[in-house]
Image (cartoon, rainbow, N blue to C red):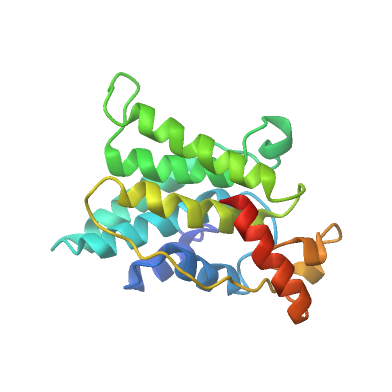
Length: 207
């Protein structure tokens, strides 16, 4: 149900206004906004919402905006059920779960519907494995980047709208806000060229 003054409303408007079909790049725009906190459950919405926005843009249907708004509201309702810290307390990173929600919305998955059920589970398990290999706890932005980058191939495999995969490795601007940042061990850490080379090696490990 739509509301006024929700923390996610500015994200919805930003995504609806975008024509991007590249989820990784669009998510960087969202996360770079001063209204997006460094940590927290808002990322449980951002990941899936970004994928939905780019998927609809790639689909380019005549009623794209109306359908996107409806899907973003559904995404918000689903993601709101995930509390902060579930990566530790549930053993499931919210970024991977968020991508799974978006996938389920696109496929029209339902508890008793066989089609799409297996594929959604396999995608989330793939994302969780990549996130688990990416480093340490308490970096919502790193985990979101890993989840979105890996999810694109799964969405594209559906054979419908094709989203763009970004070849560029984004540079994190939030490391100073994270007291347990991995530093050069993170593929997105902003530092000297040596750190970026190490980051590139880390990205290869996640594949």
